[in-house]
Amino acid sequence: MKTQVAIIGAGPSGLLLGQLLHRAGIDNVIVERKDPDYILSRIRAGVLEQGTVDLLREASVSARMDAEGLVHDGFELAFDGRSERIDLSALTGGKTVMVYGQTEVTRDLMQARAAAGALTVYEADQVQPHDMNSDSPYLTFQHNGETVRLDCDYIAGCDGFHGVSRQAIPAEALSVFERTYPFGWLGILADTPPVNHELIYANHERGFALCSMRSATRTRYYLQVGAEEQVEDWSDQRFWDELKRRLPAPVAERLVTGPSIEKSIAPLRSFVVEPMQYGRLFLLGDAAHIVPPTGAKGLNLAASDVSTLYRILLKVYREGRTDLLQKYSHICLRRVWKAERFSWWMTSMLHRFPDTDAFGQRMQQTELDYFVGSPAGRQTIAENYVGLPYEDIE
Ligand code: APR
Ligand code: PHB
Image (cartoon, rainbow, N blue to C red; front, side, top):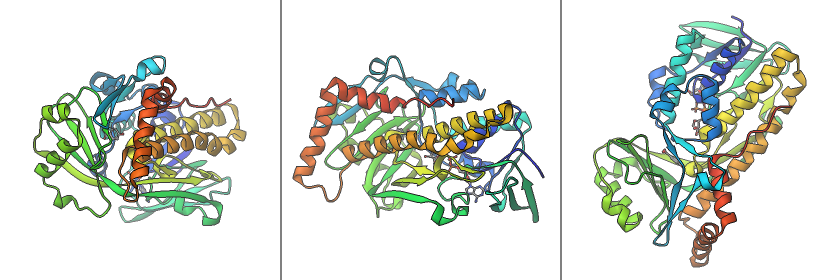
């Protein structure tokens, strides 16, 4: 088998890149370890930056998002018995975010790919990139009991944090930057009306809480929990009781509870690998970086990597600009590190850390107080939350 771009992984990164390339007439094949139902069963975050929304529109996969997604022009920060609204739109010259679940983005991308007749090989085992440093890289994998070889011009490693792409690069060619946090997020999905029309990020002495949503009838709530906590120990009742304790009293009073339809604990991690490229293999999305979810940046960073590689490949195939390929990693990492900083900062400012003493707690409260009390501080939060601009590809 032969294609122009071999894409490993059918998560949002791989599917979005595939869709954009396909529409531009650049042939690509996606090779994925799991089956579609498994991929669509994963519940992930749900806040899309303007740049992500624009890219989904450019890829012609935005019809349902535009019809069903919720445009949010602000969110609440609750701390110290106060509730402060960050007016995203007013602080950023009219920018907003779109609340639309990543699972739905993935579903729309899968449908578009199927409708376009582009090839995705699901349930491929032992996917392995080869000869990334030559002019003729290729993938091998097992499918239906056969060994398949896929020759290509370029390989896009869109296979997430546990994928094979990053691991296929010699360790000495990579620098890894990592931080793990001593807590996780316990998330619950429920068919209840949202407690607030906008998201609420709450700093509380019992730990962080987040009120989010998927629609006018479906909510997503999170609680900071200890790293060693087990989801089995959290009945729905215990979750709702704890959430109410951590929210401002008027919000807790109007919280509508109900049976959970999904409940899970996710660890929090910051992770970046440099460079995001090895010869003709490019890393995108979670394969190259992880952010803690506090800034809702995971999917949005994946989208900006996709935009960068897509625009470079367009120029490579249309104008012969192979010189741009060496710039991919630099361009991505400049934006990645800024989103890493924002996600780390939001996490540090909003969570309880086991080693935070009384001084540390005052510093955290004062940081919140200072930032929301200053127009410059509010603007800093807002411009990062809606997403920093994408760099032009010359
Ligand atoms: N071979 C083939 N496919 C693989 C392999 C492998 N060895 N390893 C992983 N995959 C597949 C996974 O099954 C998954 O479908 O790659 C896909 C990676 O998808 P994601 O983990 O969703 O990563 P990405 O597409 O970069 O999306 C980033 O997802 O995890 C969130 O916070 C993150 O929102 C961000 C977004
Ligand atoms: C979510 O809705 O799942 C969500 C929203 C905002 C975040 C993280 C997760 O910062």
